Image 1 (cartoon, rainbow, N blue to C red):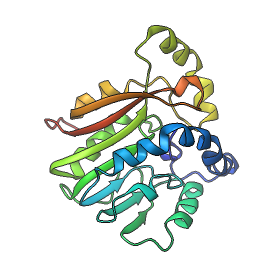
Image 2 (cartoon, rainbow, N blue to C red):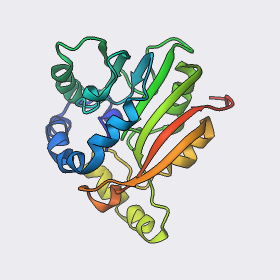
Image 3 (cartoon, rainbow, N blue to C red):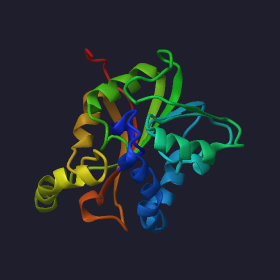
Length: 219
């Protein structure tokens, strides 16, 4: 369940409702471990940082003070809430942009952050290709994503409920095999798994880790 990258520039009633509901819906999960995971992951961010699908800004308070952070978010309703959270903070800049069309030069970014975003973007490979483009040699993607379960029984349930869940969660896919997609563009350095407690079971399986750009493929 992401910050809104799938809904693009739409700003209708359902999009505004989703933005208002987003943090209350995630609150129990944040309290039961997700906030701690954000902190553990984002303390590894350094240099020029770009976060894709920043949503309402739940990552904002976890970045190191030394990082220069660009927060990107395409959905107007999410962006307005993000603006309020970032107001008055130094070292942070907001940009209205989709994850597959980032306004950054080639090889200009040290760290890209993706938390609960790749489940929602319509074309994951296109987004990952864009992240490879903007990362410097030696740059790193930090990710925390909910994914398709490895166990066949819950995976089948995710497949069965993928359509209704996507309709409720504004395009979020609960059955996406994100690890396989990452491996097409990145070399995974470390990969941990966890359970997203406090959330519906279809989004319980989590992956957390880092990756560096692999061999470039044709876009």
